[in-house]
Length: 104
Image 1 (cartoon, rainbow, N blue to C red):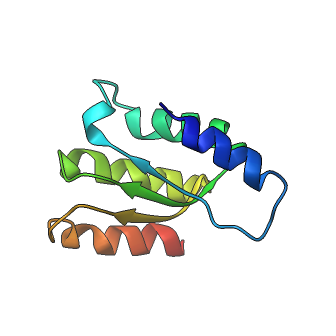
Image 2: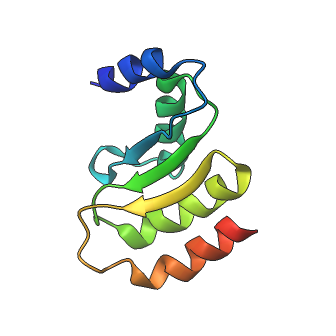
């Protein structure tokens, strides 16, 4: 597990002409309240970078719980943009929060 990020990190090391994205999967988050950041930090370490250009929530499980945790990551600069995948419209209510956090 996680080998693809390690391989990708080796390939992109020192390059400035790439955009990197990674994902947060709620089903592997466990019980930690800081799971979104903890999993991101693991990804950043494997990728060998200090930020992700795009951080995806990969599944709508408990989306109301996890989505607000992305905003501090955007404000801190660890994440430039956020996205959702495998969702069917359940996240539209968070668009304003995302845009506001990103633009500050």
